[in-house]
Image (cartoon, rainbow, N blue to C red; front, side):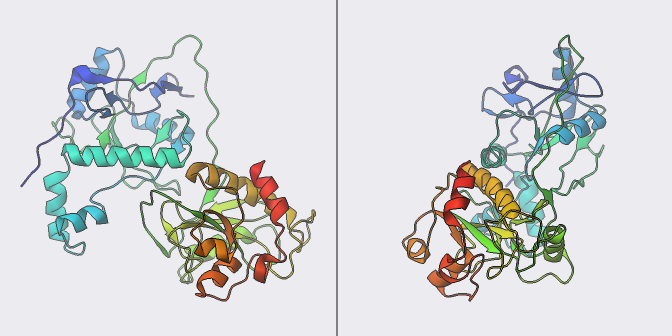
Length: 376
C-alpha cells in the first residue's frame, strides 16, 4: 500500500536561522534547505511550488552553478539514501530482490515517515561533524532554477547524480528532495573562504557500511613503514585499489597529510574485536623502530606524525564524546571508553597478534605526550 504523501504548507516554510552564504559569483544562497515550521523538517514542495514560494519572497531557486558554489564552501556530509538495510529488514523485504526493493521505495518515498528518517539522519551526521551553522552540502537533493534536481555528491568530489530535468513542471515530491533559495547581493555582503577539510578522501574498497549512532573507542595503529612523505597516500591508495587487502582504516596519517578512507559512521576493518565500536587510525611508522617523540624528517622521527594524529583524534573525541583517556586490555574488557592501541585490542580479544603502534604493552608508545597533544 502506498503511504500518504507529505507536502509542506507554503505558509509554514521559512529560512533556517543559519542564514545566508555569500557566493563569489554574486548574491547569496541559504546555508541550509528551507525549513517547515509545522513539522520542524526541511520543507518538501514540488519544484513548481518551491519556485513560486521563493519568488514570492523576492528570491528564487538557485542555479546548478550556484549550488556548485554552495558545495565548494560547505561542510560535507554523506548522503542519506533510502531504503536503508534496517528499513528493508523491518519490512521483510529481501535486499537482493530488486523488484521488491523498488516497489517498497516507490510506496514510501513520499511519506512523512521517510522524510522524518532522512532529516534525522542529516542532523545526526551534522552533529558528528561538529556543525556550527556552516553551510551544508548533501542535506538532500535540491530543486534548482529551471526545474532540475541537483543531486548528491560523493566524498571524493564526484556527483552521484547529475542535474536532471525528469520532474520539470511536475508536482513531484519525495523524502530526499529539498530546496535552498538564492537572493540578490545586499550591502555588506562578504564572501567567506571555502571550507577546507583537514583530510583528503580516498575511499577504501573493503569496509562495512553502517549508520553508527555511537563510537566508544579510537584505536591507534602503525602502518609498519619508515616515515616518509607520500607513504600515507600510498597506504590509502592500497586500501582503495583492485588488490586491496581485507582491511581498511578510517584515516591514514603521515608527516605530510591525512587521508580519510572510511566515513566515521561506517565500520573499518582494522582491529578484530574493536571494529564495531571503534574509529581506526593508521599512523605512518613502525612499532619497534619509530621514535614517536622525536622531532625531525628522518625515517624514524615520529613527532610530526604524532602531532597530526593528535589533532585529528581531538576532533574525533569531541564529535563522539569519547574520553581522552588511555585504555589497556583490562580497560577494554571492562567496557571502558577512550583511546587505545591495536596492541591492547590484540591482548584483550586474542583475535590478532598485532602489537602496533608501540609494541606489546604499549612500551614504546608515548602516552603522556600523545594525550597532552590531543587535549591541546
